[in-house]
Length: 205
Ligand SMILES: CC(C)(COP(=O)(O)OP(=O)(O)OC[C@H]1O[C@@H](n2cnc3c(N)ncnc32)[C@H](O)[C@@H]1OP(=O)(O)O)[C@@H](O)C(=O)NCCC(=O)NCCS
Image (cartoon, rainbow, N blue to C red; front, side, top):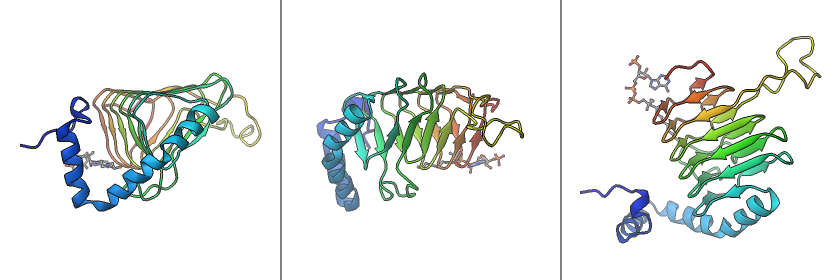
């Protein structure tokens, strides 16, 4: 019987055995895994020291993300974060490394434990919250702001009156590849968001 990979058996004899078995079948993953370990100290320096991100233990970065943290804003990432950034670190192909950006001094990005993200970007002017064990498919965009005012006369140069509303993504959500999650979205625990979806504040699940 197949043993289900789970948090409780991570690092166990069965976990190591199944990792070894899959390495024989998929040798390119071994290269990727080695590169991940090589980048670990760099990730620590870049995220924690350079960008001021709070991040828990057990992270895996396949290439480095780009972090743009507005001064005084907060970016908090839980334990066992898995993040694909190299173009070939995901079989679908990553368009660009994940961009994690706070767009105002009081913005908050909070990512739970055991979250996986492949490429894509998230920009919070207010707040983006992602629950534990949520998976975010390749090249998905999560933005809680319109970036520009909607009134036509002010649109080009005005930086006030830009609408923003926080995003809450629940626990154990599966978001398919190339989705766009817009301001005010609330995705309940265990939901599935089909590939290529656009989610907005009144999307029903
Ligand atoms: C959502 C998903 C899981 C549904 O799988 P499924 O249950 O086998 O889906 P089916 O093909 O039987 O379709 C079920 C219904 O959902 C609709 N649907 C499925 N995928 C859809 C999509 N991406 N966009 C819009 N509608 C979709 C189908 O049209 C169908 O509707 P109907 O019942 O009215 O005919 C799958 O389509 C999907 O998007 N997987 C995500 C894969 C992915 O991106 N992985 C991440 C890689 S990094």
